[in-house]
Image 1: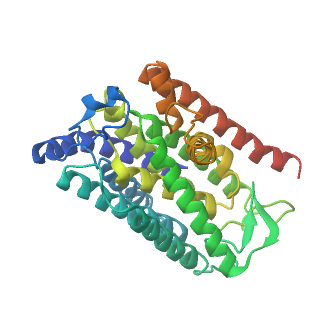
Image 2 (image 1 turned 30 degrees about the vertical axis):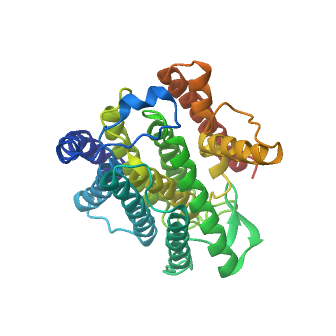
Length: 352
């Protein structure tokens, strides 16, 4: 438990002070956000705000995790290293997209097909590697069985398991990316989800089959260390949120949003709570659905729209809600979604 506190605290402090330094560096080089002309007019004042801020909380999370292990003397685990690798790789794809935008001074970054292909390749490598590194209890970081609130008896096999991981990672990373449209919205919602993973990891460790092979125990390879990593991400995002709240001094960019989505999906897969990702990331699901609904209805209705603009938070902007009101109310939705997810997780344990 000491590791969790150390990881979260070090990541928070590093991100809190590191973000301020990064803002100065990015502003000095003129690496500011490019705002689309077809977006809400209120966003035009954000033009030029430093972007690519996701760099700092990725580094902060990795730093916090490694410092916690250095202080306690505990070894790092394959599960956590794989999730960090996934996060860094997706963050790099996002960085390329952000870099192309700021260097060209327009909103066109990486072509969409290349971005999606890169995400799919990274996710597939993560899924494949996650099926390796079997420990002494015959547990790999990722299971070949589908998991809901815990591992089920539905066998996927290696091939389908990798495909499923690709779907999870791409859905989560693009979901967070869509939610990253208002100051602090995606960051705050992600913190809540990471804190939920901390609780889940600690609980699974306490009821682990490696400690007590009783009925209903959790067969998860490295639950406590994954809780440490989740705490590091929560701390890093909290430090970043200090500067990312309205009016934001820095944006996370695709560097951050793709990485955060990857971290959330990676933790869900390695903690064996894959389908629980739907309620735990409920806000991201709702925002993604708003885009899908808008797109489908626009095509089948000959140009009509369900929302004034998608994603959903932009609809409420055009309705007349203040940005800060939207963010706080959406945070409430995110908190309720996380509470439902944790409730389902605990209810399964009580009913076992």
